[in-house]
Image 1 (cartoon, rainbow, N blue to C red):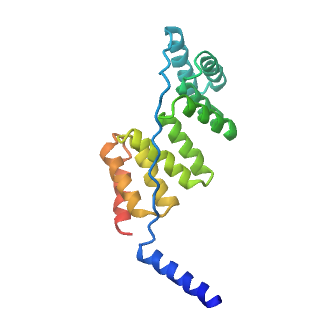
Image 2 (cartoon, helix red, strand yellow):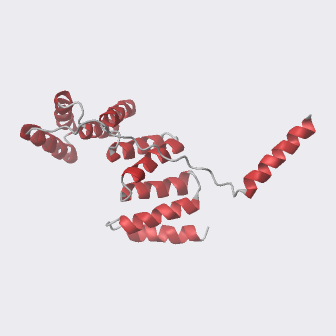
Image 3 (spheres, rainbow, N blue to C red):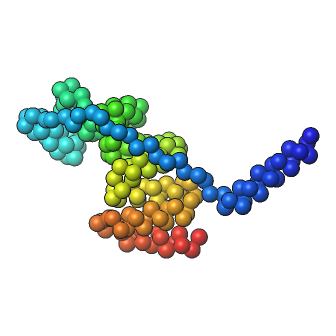
Length: 195
């Protein structure tokens, strides 16, 4: 009996080695958004833009109250929930941020900003496959999103140790990005080619 278990274990190990040990990636489920896009009044647009400005300048409490007013008036406004989640995360309230991201995705399941933040939260909590799925959803919804490509590259290289996938996403990032760090990512690609 013991010998049979040992033989089965050896067969499984040989199969894993023969397949290159490459982990299968689940295809992302692309959500369908059937919710109507909320139409903001001119006053609500001013309130939203003012809240974003306050958030960017560090006036988080004032921005929070404006976004909360907006979601009271427009409960399907995913962007307000996303910004509230950012404020909660910056205030050290991870559970509140998660709940707000859930509300954002309920309002608009195709909101790429919410999905990127979900991936970030999952990665910080060691849930790497959840992070991967959220980022793959972003790339399915918006294939030209450079931030998702960049984050997938980092996730595959540093956390999942899948260097070929990391290289592929870094290359997509370089092709899409318009920022200064492209040169750095090109160096990362060269390093990965040596692995």
